Length: 260
Image (cartoon, rainbow, N blue to C red; front, top):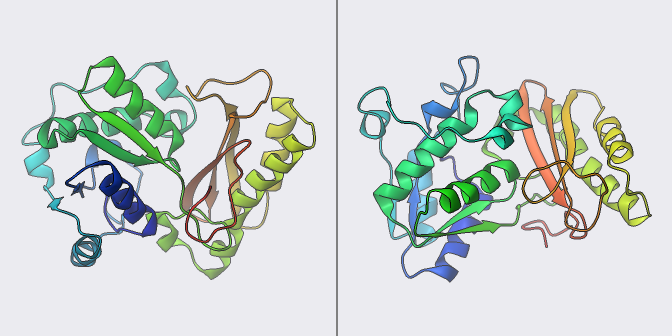
């Protein structure tokens, strides 16, 4: 949705590895925002985005406006199944209908052979993979690792909302994930205990935890935690909602640019 950062640009790099030409769409999709959400103040800087995309040798920058994507109120929408009603879907009713509808439109318009999504929005990436599978889109979905700052904070356009104190507090998300990774490696495999530990680790000043869930690759709750279990967390830092996750067995890494 624009306001590009290094995480987005790593998706461009990955696409360059997989395809001869790279198309980047920038569109702040109104269909995925709820009435009380931040559509009007969502960060935008198209001239800067163009410069960053050009520097990464993007072949085509597709920047439609809302009237081009939605000439009228959409009659047909992509309404996902029950898995989209959990986690982010529970926190933001209707969000994934908006996401999958615009993604389906973009796939039809661009007709890519491969589309690259980031893993930070884990539930979204998994739902897009199911969209392609269930509706027989002729393309491959590639999910790229989360890109982080040196201190572990996952890159997000919404990080720009954070003041300096909130920015420090936001590290509670990645610290909680690292703590759960270490606890699991120490032998704890009970999801309820790990969930409680994750929520407790995020309880710091300015942070209100929303969820800590342990799920499989299909975003289904697990009865016992193993390698490849995904820990997904969300919290409100000040007025800003942030997401993060870790695949147990991989860790969140210490590299300032990208996780393992």
